[in-house]
Image (cartoon, rainbow, N blue to C red; front, top):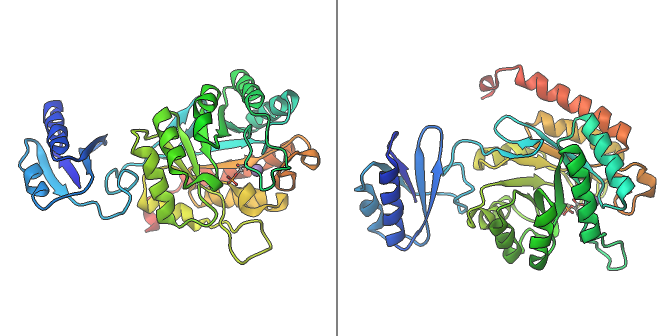
Length: 342
Ligand code: PEP
Ligand code: MN
């Protein structure tokens, strides 16, 4: 249920509502919006709860939350969420541009990439230090050494560092160096890990599982939000279909769907979504045209020598040209009154 407070409800009235919700054995989450404050009351509800809450001071209405996910839904928070860390801003009209190699390989590689993508307009730096590889014999990442290299690149450029955390035991270590914790597609339903990154208080980029439905994706986000962490971004990175011409199938309609259902920023990954370098620029631009709140793109100084995912990585020059096109699209759309569309 959502307890909608009257406009201008006092802090005392909000706190009294929170206490009442907790007395009923429900979890209370206060969401302060521009128009109104709501208290999301989450848990198993009983017949008399609605009436009991409605009679509270400063309460305007008590309405059920229809979506299976609660904190993630637009019903609870109509205003878009913005995630802001260092140079990176995504959501509520801002587009975040994250770029970097699939894996951190050495200091020179990550530093030169950070400088190049920053010069091209990126606001975040990606790079895996803990790599989820299909084969145990493939490069598994530089682990803490890689994290240190990412942190050094961040310190020089002010780019927000995005890097994957694969297991609960590593959350503290990765959080020590990263600005945004990435949950990989393979771990989207690792619920203990979701709780742990939620509790870390760091912004999180949650990638969609390759075979997950939208409801499963949003319920995974709910695990993070439920820990009191509202800095969650959803990343569409492609799903597994019968198609073989791309590594995954990239549904850009996810942007529009998710914007309707959730207030969380939506980031598109055209690199994993297509699996082919030549497709990445067009899909990055198309993501921006679809209204994505950001893109995350693999970029490598020499893709032919990359230790992972070189076949879907852009060169520095390819990324710079892609950024020029993305920014042109974003600027063109901003200049038009979006309200005319529907
Ligand atoms: C990655 O971003 O390098 C990665 C492994 O992505 P995903 O989890 O989407 O496969
Ligand atoms: Mn990759």
